[in-house]
Image (cartoon, rainbow over all chains, first blue to last red; front, side, top):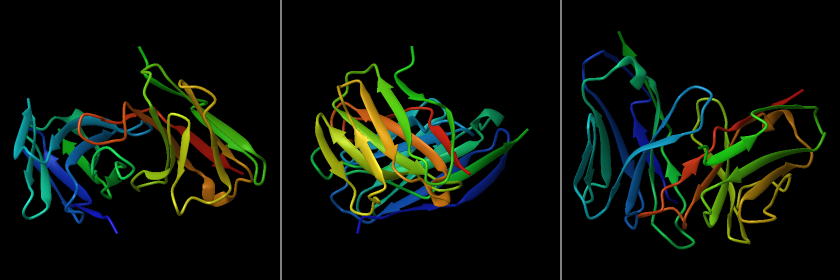
Length: 114
Length: 115
């Protein structure tokens, strides 16, 4: 069935360094790839997403890259700050229609040390 | 300014005692989802409503039911909570089924404790 693998499960970086989280998906029909940030005790918040017709998207310190051929996508956070510490989830979706549900990765706990 | 509201934020119930969790949205979205999230795990989709059409996930236990009386509100009913049902329950909405241009907005969640 549909599956999204996410690595690493935990990531610790020094403030100011970059952080990279990688995901691989199994369903070649997936065409939408959001990333969510979840802080302790809160619901996931969408931070960036990318469509399958785009290879890279950037929003200030956050960027996402997509390699459709290899079926993997990555989240890049530059100049990390302590407030970036949270659990990050990648997800994949086929898009609208009955198969439009999100398939989540297992999550990455990011710790940014001051 | 809240868009997806969940009440209560914390719910304690007894083993086997029915409990209802509430979700409301101000976005007028067509789709409302219920997820279960256990500690250190990804959210797991239980079911969703597309307008009035209910769509159950194949592995969702019968113990979990849902109601959507109108566009704005959706309820999660747990008929006989077991200890294994203790989790964070997340409600989410999207304009259409998730995908290109239809991002999912999550509520803050309800933390359910079963004694």
